[in-house]
Amino acid sequence: MRINICLLLLLLTAWSCAEKGKVNDKEAISLDDFKSYHLDLNLPKESFIDMIESVELMQFEETDESLLSTIRKINRLDDGFVFHTDKKLGTNEHTTIYFFDENGKFKNKINRQGQGPEEYISIGSLWVENGLVTVYSMPKSIIYRYTPEGEFVDSRKLPDKLRVGDIRPYKDGYVAEMNYNPINDTSYYKFAKLNKDLKLEKAFLKYDKAPDEMPWFIAYSTVIPYQGGMQLFRVFSDTIYAYTNDKLAPLVHLDFKGNWFWGDKPAPTNELLEKVEAENKAWVLGMSIGQKHIYADALIGYSHWEYFLIDRINGKVKRMEMPKGKSVNEEFLYLGWEKDRLMFSVTTSDVPNILSALDENQINYREGTTLEKVESSENPLVMWVKFKE
Image (tube, rainbow, N blue to C red):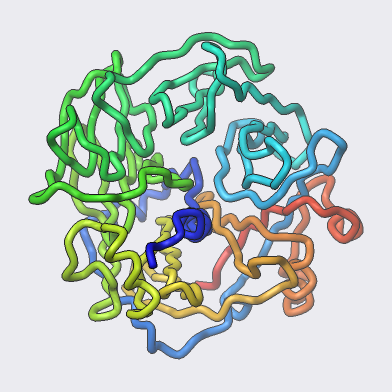
């Protein structure tokens, strides 16, 4: 039986990356030499809550205009946040762009979904550049720009024979992850550099054999700002690359040893994806690099997720037992690091389990957020976690 593509998409969306993952701590610079870490699925689990030094909670204001589902990607702005969320059946929420201030107060939202020349079909990538909201829509390979009020500014189409999986501005051009799409219909590379006119400038890491039957729709970020450059991640990969000063180099390898499904297999095909459940190995991987730690999670077959915290300084790896709430998927969704704190999107039903296990002096609330407001709202929260040394 061929794999259900909708199920695959649902599983892949459980992995997310923050849109702003910059690391500014000078101590981290010396840690950016390539390293490999063993993620042992047999390590004893340690409590995630026991690793917490402190948390800060921020509620996204709930109004008639800002009823949200789960947040999986977020852009950190100087004065707040901008993001779009998961799709709710019967709504167009997944194509609506929301703005909140730095304390979670709702500012405005825009939606320009449609078939017209000034409208996007879907949101593949989202960022803010020079004060303009920028959307890359994959179906037509077009980059659209709007004012924060939703007024159309301009659009630019990628070359006809170039469709990318994820893309971000870099210096005077763009960096893209190809997501198994061909370049010029013939050559397959993992990453590409485009110039300011969106013309192909460089291509990196060519496939020995062209991928076959790979679904092209992916709902998470694979190009992430990092250290003045970019982190580049590839679907179904255990290696993260750094692109800095027009040079690509491996940054981190997460080694599952014999428990990595793709270890000795060629590029993904539907036939291979049918074997994922039977082998029950890690095959979808997410991670975020912080100043001193790396957070990683891995989907094991179709059964469950495993969570790890890696100390970049001493190389130690901890396998984490995550708290479970009453939310539908009962998973924490990480949004990336802000300096030495890891951001999570959590539901209001998850919060009591976490707070009840912490001392009062470990819990902080952002201005405007209170426990009473959290308990009375259905909107998700952002929780910043600082881990113990």
